[in-house]
Image (cartoon, rainbow, N blue to C red):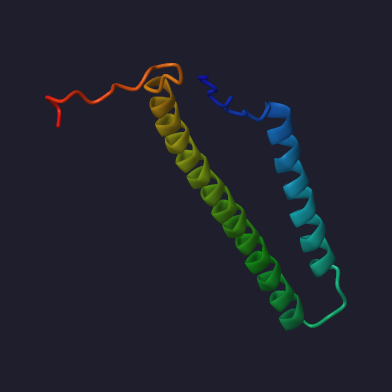
Length: 103
């Protein structure tokens, strides 16, 4: 009945791939904005927009992760309560009949 969830751990290769992918994406966008044939103000605006989008994506990912962790903690507490109730319950136990002294 003790089903402890296995903590999922990312490998170093997965972490490296995620960092490399993020770096390539940011670099490609920065290079594209730099080579854009537009006024400096337009390039600056696009650069700020990319930074805002990037920070918003990190914030959203953190909020989603935090919400998932909270639901896992609540689930663990509920599971522990259920296990405690189930260990004290005997479906084959004969209920005690009240005696005249109990009344």
